Image (cartoon, rainbow, N blue to C red; front, side):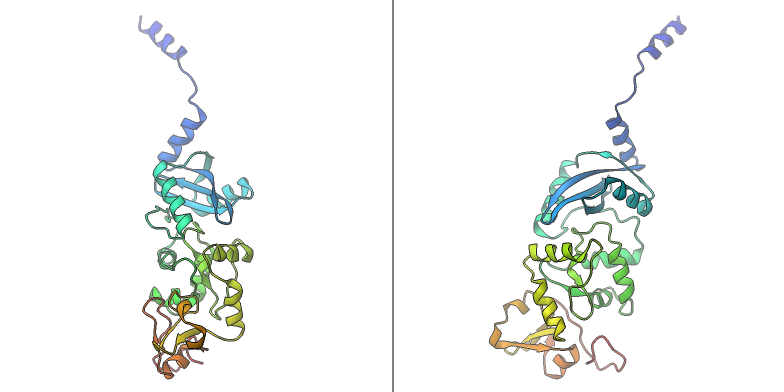
Length: 268
């Protein structure tokens, strides 16, 4: 009797749908799912898992995106799948506002230093830029400018953690992991003017100040952009600003020169 029952039960066995298999592998952390979303500069590949968004890249080759994902995380990129509704809403807000806000991101593949760099970078407001040295100083590693650049070049969730808002130490816009054209397009979409940024850098201008408030800022700071032309003062270094009697902006926190003889980043 039991043999007949077992035989009948085996005859009822069927192959689980591929989507169910992929969903289970994603939920237990063996696979990451992926999808395509719209952004201000075009469509993006987005990988995700229960921890959050794990990867973002401009749409190109799925195979290339999957290979990079595997190398970076050690996890296979599974089948395409819709984002969970809450994650989809949070990602849409992040792309629309330019701020990660409550969007969960999976940075398990990053070192603690990389995570510190990315967390600090996520604080830069849309339409504003800071140099690599600012990020290094803000995380308490002022001598790690090159390491900051390397960490940002490996940013797994570009666009939502805005490494495009970090520029070169000379004040210019600089390069980007996905090409300078995309970096400039992202900045323009946020209301920044990359050409004006590069023009200031070409003239050696690192900071701008107001002769009424006696405060100096990074040129793209919201406070700097409110300074009228007749009251704008340009500085080549924090040293020049401080010795002229100006103090650093509390919003963009430019470098404050304290007279260190070896401070090449701030002295003239």
